Length: 280
Image (cartoon, rainbow, N blue to C red):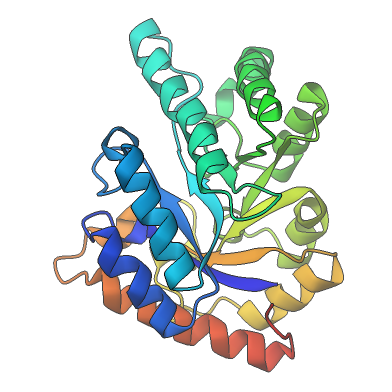
């Protein structure tokens, strides 16, 4: 396994500051966020900027395991839905352009919707996901669906059912264990279910049980990263463990995106060492 950081926690940080900072800390890779409000929003990435990002990654020896293109797949307004699909399919194209080897980065998204929508809308969701996955498959890019608290897909069971309905090797999971930890699901249970079908991961820290919970920077809470890493290894996952800092944390008046990346690295690097897991 390797250790990554998502620029989700760095919406206002220029990429030529973010990449050297992450590399100097010792991260192995970075997830690039391309949604609105970010310095790397998709519409700003012209040909020259894409080449510049690729050069920065190469210069600083960072892998690009994933692209965060999170867009609502259940949007009913045709114009808004078209924009969302433009971003997601554009993420696929970007993944091909920035690929560093034979396997391009996964394109991550959340589904949108609400948990109570599942029985009524799962086939509609599967059709839209299927369209996106077909496009990804045509370019050799995996789509990674992230189960998320409060979304239509909020349990391992639902995302596994979606994978079964769509039935494509180009649809996998972006496994963020925090969304299960805050509802009291045991690490062993969620890892056993999702590690084998995961293309990428997120980890945060967290406190409390939903609805009374708080997302935190890794190291601020008590999540057992050592146990989590050992479980992921035991269930055959060998990809990136990527730290993500939530918008909840970013809303703090004193939020420092570079310090958050540093705290996350120190916490997770120590966990790899304590777990006896060599990175790379």
